[in-house]
Length: 267
Image (tube, rainbow, N blue to C red; front, side, top):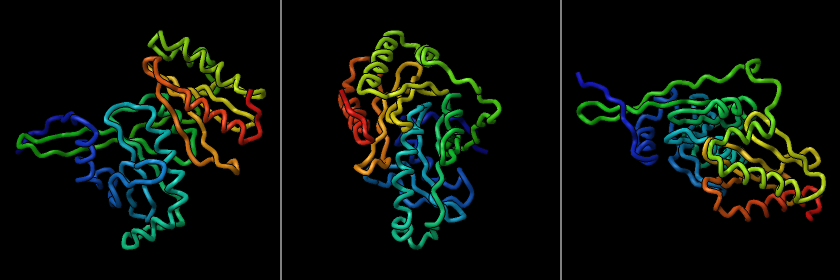
């Protein structure tokens, strides 16, 4: 009987290959529609349909990466809008366009912050941590377990402060830049409010979120809500700050445009 050993995939391409060969190991009845199906706003890792006919968006990370949630929500927004066209494209797969898609996130590990954030967004997020395996004769496989989510009553009712969020960053040189960007976004125009949640510093104008700063241990993300001329949300975009030397001018300009499209007057 072959012995099983834990396998460390060299990169996401290898991990994708293992997952694709045994897609129904993630969920019985899951059927692959397309690996890396390109859309205008990006390329979801796997687009599937479940046994009940619902589209399933699967986003995969080799290791812990908190950006996975924003990526998946970006893809969800477009796929949800195009679900009738997708059902027609895969007419032999019994896709039910009346049902909204599901989101499954797969990674080696999920942080506590991401687990909490996953309980606070709509649509519902399902988290699966993986272990890749291989036999002594070189055959590869994978197994999953559902990552436990905190119960609503376990989530602290008192939000963290902005200083708490900044202190989550362990890379000390990034903290002054975190403060600087908070002020830079706040000063784009009158009426922009900053606020702290359990996972990020948010910015809103007239009650609508326009941007966020999401701290991680050795980096942080600066993100913007992309809206169209009718002020409808069409996308989310972010830039990761890891060294402090990154060019974030483009994101600041997009935050400014978002602010102006909902009636703000930039300085």
